[in-house]
Length: 347
Image (cartoon, rainbow, N blue to C red; front, top):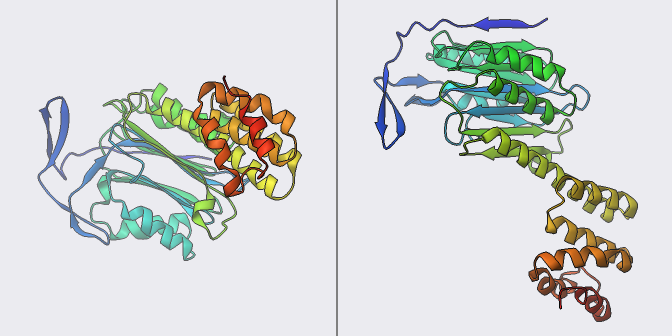
């Protein structure tokens, strides 16, 4: 079962006005609101739509968001492998992200962590926050003073939430898209964002987007646990650009897996990963080049030459680079092999 919550804006807590200055928008507030753990601070309005979710098959946790606000990525989405994922938005207090993860890491469930932080927040009626933990326990809050249309849906292993939308069809469309889309967690969350935009999206338009996906099994090294950590800070089509970056990241994930397979002497596994990367981004000379380098190090120089030829034809700087690699141990220290490689470049 899914729980659905909508708000009614009473307009009484704050007042603001827009100033048009060279086609830019400024939000000016007549008051300051105390934020939990931070003292008195000015509000930053991040009106947006987002999703927090978990893949029960892999344990991955993720957050994805789009907003008509510059650089939404550093402030709305928070996630930590083996702990949880959080979206904090509307008149946003970023401390919900940090403090929520701390509470869940300390043993609180996502609903317990959210309840505790809301209880301390005098400005909770202008907040919108969603949290999910590593066990899939999830909860969300939409303050009654969030700008309409605003609401959220909590479902199995996910929550979708939105405010300042064109209409109240946005978050139901997100939930339906997430539940019905096949694929990994990143793909399903992107489908939810696309559905939100198709249903009307932010009433002001679009500007930035972000996605974070963390692995289900923490390594203790956070930089290894982030499968996706991508941001589009300013774009007329942020979701299209975010999808492009996700595809590129998938390709580089295959490249990294290929390099790891080489370290483990799994040559065939490495070549499968490199081929998968190039299939996703066939225009990347970088991927083709390092695929060719791996073939040389496997003793398969003949197979590498067509790849080197393709790279050198697109950019001769790779020819200049190649003789420098033996000193770093990235190609055999064999002048005949190096000469054979560079000889396939344009004459």
